[in-house]
Image 1: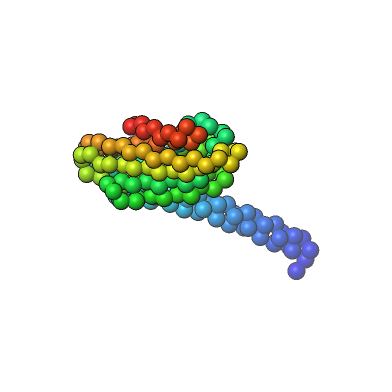
Image 2 (image 1 turned 135 degrees about the vertical axis):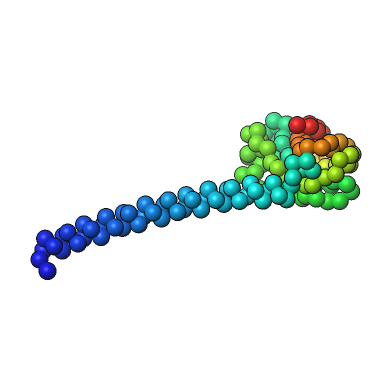
Length: 159
């Protein structure tokens, strides 16, 4: 085999490798797209819009308050309990919103009880509890639970 044919063979195999790499990247993008679509379909099947109720946690702009945990009771049953990481606390302090629970709920009234625990930067502990009656109609229901930690207050907002 001559030196020039060896160089041509290396060029061809580099081109083949580039082509395979591009195909692999295309397949990865397709898999990511399909996974995203499957997740949306799964949510629609598990939580149809006419019975869906979703609950979200947010903080009332206090950067000196660090949320430690939240417990959510719906219809007198604990449906969610969450311990917060440093990154989650940071995101909430910067205006982020966390979906803490999604459920299928019949139309009518449903008691919602929220308990939280947190600390101020100085180390003072804050706890709060609030009750809210979720009025579910036909169609999706979204409820924001806004925690104002240092005031030991919880506000509810229907979307």
